Amino acid sequence: MLTFNNVDFSYPKYSVCNDLNLSVEKGEFVFMIGKSGCGKSTILQLIYFNLLPLSGEVEFDKYNSKTIRPKDLPFIRRKMGIIFQDFKLLNDRNIYDNLSFVLESVGTPKKEVMKKVTSVLTDVGLLHRRFSFPKELSGGEKQRIAIARSIINDPILILADEPTGNLDPDTSHEIVELLFKINERGTAVIFTTHNYEIVKKYQQKIIKIENGKAIKAVLKQKNVF
Ligand SMILES: Nc1ncnc2c1ncn2[C@@H]1O[C@H](COP(=O)(O)OP(=O)(O)OP(=O)(O)O)[C@@H](O)[C@H]1O
Ligand SMILES: [Mg+2]
Image 1 (cartoon, protein in one colour):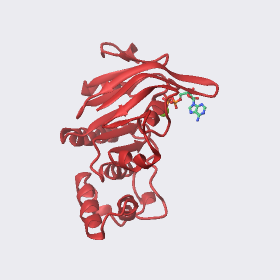
Image 2: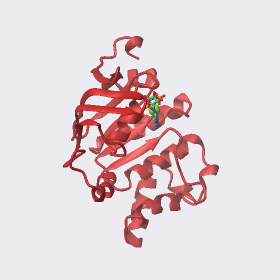
Image 3: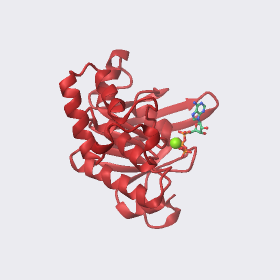
Image 4: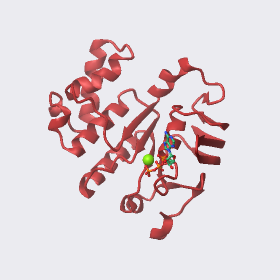
């Protein structure tokens, strides 16, 4: 479903990917690990086609970074959900409006909007908070809302960039459990993290980024990080 073929990417003064090859299959759950600054967030942006390779190619679904057109982007982005460490909710509107906004911006009919918002809020266990504002929620609740937002267009892939980075250990495990529940319905997940305990506990495929390349890592000892 997702393949990087010999991808090179550099910022003006910093080379991030160097002949990077990796793949993620339909429905897979993958932890992406590596030292701070190794390029994990940049790789997620390449997957999201927010950045394009300088050479090589990123293939996602039926799209290819070499042939992609700007008008493809809204369709691609509906097939991906994205979650960040700092939630990125809109603070000037309540939870319902944070979610309905995503659907209204792609022209979803009002009746359908209400059905979908209700359904994803039920999935994350927060329907009763629909009229709250982001500032009234805990970090864990905000991340649940961000997850609800990420699945609202039924994506085939979720990109989670350190989604537990701001959360305490118990809340972090709840968030991972929720992403596993979504993964069990067939949605692939790429989860970047520095949290050794989480990677150890859940025993999924690990992609380790090192020196601009992806290394298949097996979690045997702590120094895998
Ligand atoms: N917009 C940018 N312009 C120039 N350099 C950048 C830019 N964004 C990131 N970098 C650099 O590229 C490298 C990779 O950054 P990236 O954010 O992808 O790393 P990361 O693995 O996600 O790190 P962390 O684990 O700390 O989140 C870093 O050295 C960073 O300073
Ligand atoms: Mg990062």
